[in-house]
Image (cartoon, rainbow over all chains, first blue to last red; front, side, top):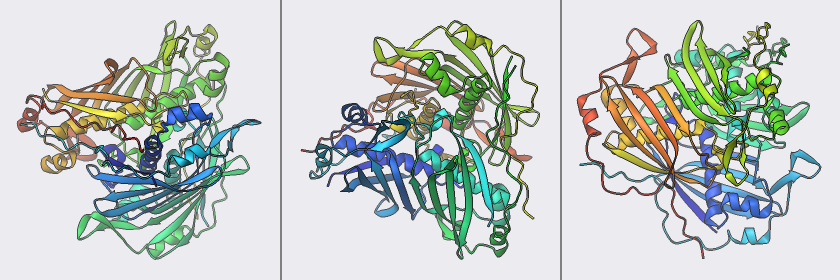
Length: 156
Length: 156
Length: 156
Length: 156
């Protein structure tokens, strides 16, 4: 099962007056991780939307369990994969790690969606092309990802 | 059970390239609705934090089911209440309505939290004062809330 | 000159670990105020985009001077107007007031823009229709705006 | 003069219904770049705040000129430096490059600030320690930074 790993540096602007990440920011991070997983599978979002005439893969269900807070300056690693596919929807799992510890487990159910043909204000789920699903079943790439947050060379 | 109602105008900046609300924005809206419910109960966040020496009421679990998308210019109404209390946590429910229809159901489990005495990077759940809980069991106020999004008087 | 006034409650999630508004949030507020001024002029954004076949009025220059910080729970008032129009651009001014004091002065230069006909990745400025400009030269409406932040009735 | 370079992948959630970056997001990016420049100078934000007893370096003036839009999937490079220092303030410049082209020039004036001793709701500018300024006058480090957006190894 294809898994994306993304290092994220928590920024000052991600945090609230308690000094910890304002939780909606985690969902922004997770959404970017989902897009990156698709990119890892060879489906950058802009190309995918154009090729398959979809508006994207909007969420219909989101869930997250928060075990540990993070603060600015923290580096966290998010592992993202798609454990199950249905006809027109799929489930995404995110595991946000602080070092060896699972800080947040996040889940999304997303649909392969177009605008509704009869009502542009509504969405319509469509069958996910088989070729799309199959891209995610390949063995995970053995190459370690480049860190998203560089270790800064200190000036001398 | 005390219920807060908040009208929110969906803004251009809340929406994504598909023209619908980028879903993390809903969690920002819901978080503000929770704060407003506490304010309705006589506990404005800044005062509550100072009075009870907590860092806030961070989420430990968040869940949302999305039935209908919204777009910029839409006015939505969010009804927020706290259906259950435990020793040191409580469950918040948000119902985001588009006219008569439920567009999103959101849930939060939040804890009454201080910094951990032994480790400032961790949080510690504390018993919720009885006087706090009781403020939310009162009958809902019969006064209709002022709309947050005014109907604009057209210039003549 | 038409002027929009919008009351905004500063939320917990607008603030950073110093407990004051994270400054990019002010630009989100200002952008919503510009949209609201157009709505006050009879041009809700969605209708305007459809009617005039523009992609919007993207900023080409933004500037802001910050005199006083704000924090969660603060109510601020933003006065927005368009003091000058050019062929295809206009200048927006925002005055964010804390009570009687000017806390922030913000400025935007925006263009009336379509996608570039030769390159969809670029934008092209277009002449602003006279009828659009004239809507903003009308006398300000004397009706006081409804407050965006209701004074909450305290439950008894 | 010390210069930080940061690669940023523009995300779906950074963009608005026109499909281009919602401009307040650029200020979030710039703020993170300023923090990263300080980190490159050996002053990670959390340590700096604790060591010097400041609340941070809040902006008192922000300005940006936008020449080209960006969209999701774009990789942009931001070069950040501090061209001038005053007693208690400094000017930050950001150059956001799309390939060889300058897409946005951003400027911030920031102050070295504590809470006001007589009024915790106000800030007070303080003289910037000489040792802080001097860290930024060193020659830029010759080591190329790791890209923040990895080129993904395609799964086989």
